[in-house]
Length: 140
View 1 (spheres, rainbow, N blue to C red):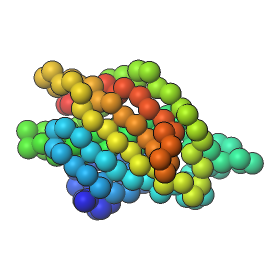
View 2: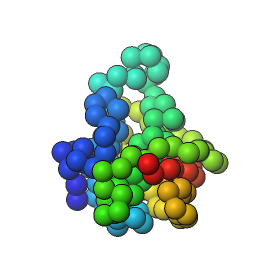
View 3: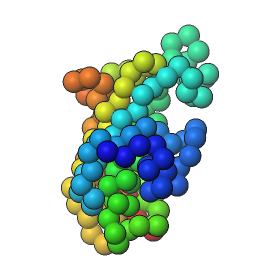
């Protein structure tokens, strides 16, 4: 398990854009499972939406990508590198994510060719899928 400090040793992201609180499972170069506790104090809730706060779907995708980046950058050959979005395909948002929810973020690398790869990513609240997507990444 990795805590926030250990995650920040791997990822360049910092508050308010670090969207992963901890990593519960890690297979370097293969998959990772992380968590994000969504609180009412998240900066985006001030405008999305003031009367009914909902975590933006693009930020759920970013959180999933950050979990995948931990898996990629934990491989010895990728230490010290950056991971960038190359694309998002087949994103689906199944339910709202609101303050008080705890996101379980699972990203598995399904195809890698050189510095480019694809991850299958699913976000859960409890046992319910709230978002899923296929994420393309580029290691630089």
